[in-house]
Amino acid sequence: MPIILTMFLLIAITLTSAEVTELNVPSEVVQGETLSISGKASADEVVWIGSSFEIALPVSDGKYCREFNGIHFPAGEKVFSVTAENIKNIRISIYPVGWWTIEYPQEGPLNATNGTATISVSFPVTWNGITIDISGKKNVKVYGDAAEDATAVTLKVATSKKVIADSTGDFELDINTGGVPLGEFLITAGGIEKTVHIKTPVFDTGSPGNPYPSISGTHYGAIIPNQTIAVHRVYTYPCPGTGGHSEYIRIENKCTGWNVTARWEGYGGDWHNITFDESFTLQPGVEYNYTLITGSYPQIIHQHVANVTGGAITCTEFIDANGKIYNDWIPAIILS
Image (cartoon, rainbow, N blue to C red; front, side, top):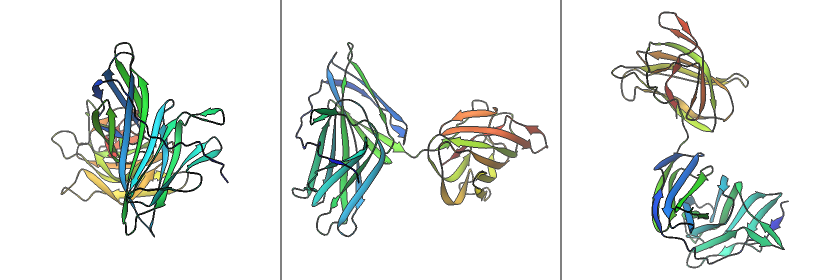
């Protein structure tokens, strides 16, 4: 059984921050990648950078629950808060913290006022003379009883991180978006708000600067993702002005025997894509072999190995339509 610590403090806190005149945030980022934030404020002043997301949770038998796995907490001074609406009460758990699970409140759920409750925690915290910070990858579980007749609960999870602007007023913060749900992610600093779209991880070779020479044929090779990739289709980049496409794909794990295949349905509709009958997931660090048969003039990456968005791809062998064999023709594709 986990040890339950009561080092959470319910706090009402006002974060005073320097005037921020500039906040730079990308418009989108792939889930699990680093979100780099920068801006301008007064020299050597404190800036509180907030990040938050909001989701709706279903209610089942009068209860709600959501576990966020792999949420990354930055080290240093910060405030973590969870607000739930349309509820009777709320409780949260954070783990692992050493060997422990931290829960608040220890005595049971925090009751809502007019259907809303907020748990807000400041870190680092001193407990029994020991100063403890929460940093790195953690799992966060939020649960409780929903309001009477509620069918959904609105949940907002937020973190405010303290940073110090340098002598010229520049500040920056990197946020790992692992564990953050897909959708909108709000970033705030000094009254400025920016919205970032957290999008699904993809395996994307990109479009090469020079896709020629190109010809149809059969590609054999390997893919090693660097993150979890959910796949339901493969897109083939065509050479400009051509009908470059894939006609058949097989992805397999030769160690386990798992495999999946899909075929092209001809020129019509979304003909650049081949869609699999069922979605599947590629795991990071696992080697998957592929067989890809192309038609017309697909774009080609003329390398034996290419590091791309989502991992690496290798050409083991390419046999072109004339029977010539190469080991440096990688098909330009997207798995998504």
